[in-house]
Image (cartoon, rainbow over all chains, first blue to last red):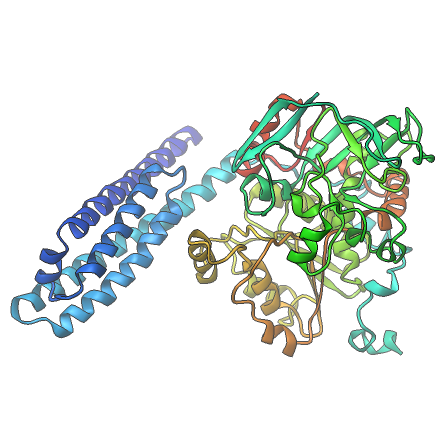
Length: 183
Length: 389
């Protein structure tokens, strides 16, 4: 495969990753709005009655994460922030599974499955964004392999400054020096 | 004159400001011929260091030609070519007499404020917050140098600006980081961070005779420069640092560890880094000390941690019990530039090292604000920016 074709394929993959990140950003905002504007309905359906303030708080968190993903130059930390949020959500929903009744338990179970699916997407997206950054950096990086700063290769320069006497107050304490040199 | 002026978080502009003038008998005014943006300037740019005010002039890596001297500055004259150390020193106080220039007791004109915040004052610094004197910095056409009879390094005309400029900070800082390790010929020295100070520390450790130097970063161009200096490199985005350092040291860990990163560690894939980011976001922590934690964990017992990286405030979850039980020696501090400058100038003159290898960008003052961003975001393979006003 030619270099150009490989680059095009890499760019397409990068676009897909960014598209996924944006999708997760909008999803985050949508879910956040629902949690913030209708905390009672959400908590009732998931067997989390009495946790309306917590649900509304989670809504704010989702909106902040969503805006962060959509507005930032690099959405990677926001995506990983979503993963941490997903873990919180699953923990809270597990509480609903334990305390809810009948249909509520079923809803909580379904919600856990859905969040687990989204978590998988978040993790895949976070990893892909990380890899994309590394690939991009490598592609753009200049090679400074000729910037030695010393007249000869390091092996030949090793110890060239051994004439330097380390001041007494910068020396390793005597008890920690190799036994021979401490004597 | 024109100068790079701090106006707030990520807001540095090239402004017209009044020319400096002699204020004290030991002052000198220099015409700046070259200056540089330092990694620690980025802590100010990102507003992580307290004590900056709108209108402060940036810069503490500066050199130039003496234009005017005060009546008590008798060892300098108009036309002398000087590098200005970033630490302002009186040369007479108890600490200066001991060679602890970075904690000069007299040069910080906001001593009372520093006494309250630090317990005891440290030296005055150019362009580096009002906690350290609020002195105008050297990213400008002219610079007033207080205590100029002591705060200078005279340099010969045989050496170019680029060869000697870094005597002002990053070269002696990297050197002191290595000296703090008291390197033995059997030592492995691990260096976190391959920015300008890390690069100088790598070469210093090689020159001082370390058996093996290992450099850690994740920026490809910085890693390539580190390899050129003789380091074995590890990419923290691809390698498990603890695992690889143990592999490279027969399972025992490096004897000496240098933190050339400081308060803004960029590791993102570790639990403690996420914790730091989260706490920093809600202002419950000032610094992100991932490197410190990793060094304490991986360093060989009875080893040395050397910390030239700048920290600003309160650090959380530092495994101090681990460090205590392993008997680690921890050395840190701002650099005592004048303590090393004669020796380092001699090594440059002898050709043992040419610090200009680190320069990747050369610009005029007008491009300064844009270069802060380029340097901060490591764009365009930027490692070190030199400005010619």
